[in-house]
Amino acid sequence: MHELPVMQSILTIVLKHAAMHRMKKIHAINLSVGTLSDLEAEWMQRYFDHLSAGTVAEGARLKIEWVPAVLSCEACGEHFEIDKTKLGGITCPACGQKKFSLVSGKEYHIKDMEAE
Amino acid sequence: MSEIRLIEIKEEILSDNKKDADTLRKKLKDQKTFLLNLMSSPGAGKTTLILKTIEHLKTRFRIGVLEADIDSMVDAEKVAAAGIPAVQIRTGGFCHLDATMVMKGLNAFDLSSLDLVIIENVGNLVCPAEFDTGAVKNAMILSVPEGDDKPLKYPLMFSICDVLLVNKIDYLSISDFDMKALHERARTLNPGITIIETSGKTGAGIDAWAQWLAKETHTFIT
Image (cartoon, rainbow over all chains, first blue to last red; front, side):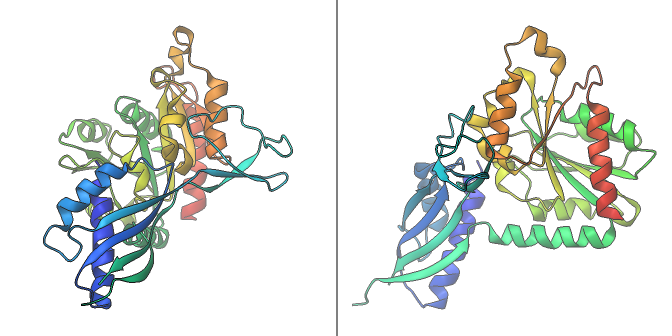
C-alpha cells in the first residue's frame, strides 16, 4: 500500500531535477533500496507509471539496485551479509561472537537518472 | 537530436517526510511534550495497552492519545471514556501515518498542557515502519498468537523500534511460541532494542513498561 506515497516522493524529486537541468524526457531512474524494505519492483514500477503519466517521467524505467542486509560484528568488526529469513542463532563468521550492528539493508535512495 | 545524460541526484526518497519529522521533534522538545509512536498488527492489543498505560501514568503525566484508524472512532471513544483527551485521525484507507498527518492531528490538542502523547498508529507491520512520524521513540507490540517468526517477515519494523512489547504472554502455555528465538531474531536486527513481556489481561509486565515510558518521558521533558 505504501508504494504510492513512496513513488510520489520519487516522482517529485526526479521532476525537480529534470526541471533544474531542463530535461524533456526521463528514460531511467537508478535507485538503491535495502532488502529489508517490503517494496516489490513490479509494483513500484506500476505505481510509478500511474503517477508519472503526462509528466516528463512518463515511461521511465526504475532500475533498482537491492542493497543486502549486512551486519558488523561489534567484537571484531567483520562485515557479513545475512538472509533476512534466517535471523536466529547468528554468530560472527570470523570470531563467533553474537553482538552486531546493522550496516546496510534499510537504504531508500535515488542515485541518478538518465534523461535528455 | 539531444543526447541522453546521466544526472546525479543523490537524495533520500522520503527526505521530505524525514525533514517534517525532525521539525516536529524539535517543536516537541521546545514545548516539552514527549511523543510515542505505538505500532503493531491489528488485534495485538494496542488500545488495551494504552488504557493500562494511562491508568499507571495519569497521576504523573498529563497524557493525550492520537488515534489513527482507517475509518472508525471506536478506539478514540474508549480512550476518551478513560478521561483522557483523544484525537482521531481517520486515514481514509491510508495504511500509515506520516509526519504531516501527525502534525495536523497534534494541532487539535493544546500541547502546552500535555507531557506525553501516544500515537496509536494504523494496525499494520509494514507501512508504518517506513514513515518517520516525528515521534521521540518508537514502540511496537507483537502478541504471542502472531508467532515468533514475525521479525523474519517484517524486519524493518523490528529494526526501527526502541522497545518491543511481547504481549498476551498469558497465551504462552497453549502456544508453541519460542520466546528465546524471538529475542534472538529481534536483537540480530536491532541490538539496542528493549524487550518487555506483557499481558494486557493479567497486567504482567505493565509496570516495567510504564516505568520505561515514564523514564523516557521524564528525560525528554525536563
